[in-house]
Length: 350
Image 1: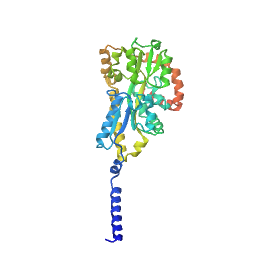
Image 2: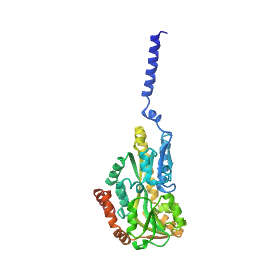
Image 3: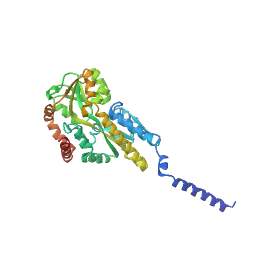
Image 4: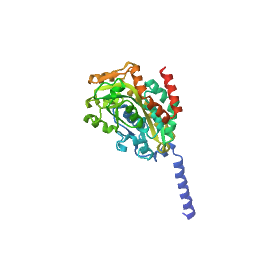
């Protein structure tokens, strides 16, 4: 065979190979670039709804993609050494690929997320839904998107209720002198200081030892978490249902990761996140009185916990005491955004 014919044969083979690669479906070509594992961070662990939502999301995506997108959950914020306030930073640094954030934990970096922590703004699940499903929720997602993450669904961990080892709390003065743990955010320190308590910030990992040793008297978390982690066995025998703030969940993907997926796979990740979020919201609301289901509150009573469900008048007394904190932080969050939220909540609970 002549040199000219050899060169022609090689050229034909190269063109054929190139044509085969270019002719591959986009999804197949993209798959070759996907990572063996995508790390998902969440605070806490099963069975609390916030963590359960992360596991459901990962399981659905992994299964429905046929393993193309292998999501693995790292609970307890272990990718950031248990410090849940560092998840957003770690995601932007490439340590975390995906996450289900508690908005409380990212509010120190994103001031607008403190809207969920304005004391007694949301009142109940109707006010919460008005925020996440309306214009305010869209505004907050745009704010998140400016931080190199792609928000794909709103979830919920629940309204944060107060427990303590010392006495029933029905009036602001009942909190005087109590050492109350909070997770993150200066707004919580100011709320409890306004009520005469001594607030202490610590991670969730440190909370249970602190309760068992008496280093703190009380804490605030959703009822589902109180039950799941058996806080009644840690001397927490008094529970106040006051709905003073809510803990929203945000399902997010690092922008660089989302951009690496084929369009069909992006749609899959989003669809699974929304499905997991809806399940998470339903789980967070079980047994707390919505629709007449009081099973969680009844379980607290069976465990010897005194449950004080505050009346609207009793809640208003706490709202008055913490109003200066509300007004101050409304300016930090953004007056226009807060006014929009107030209007949405008023319409929802009317």
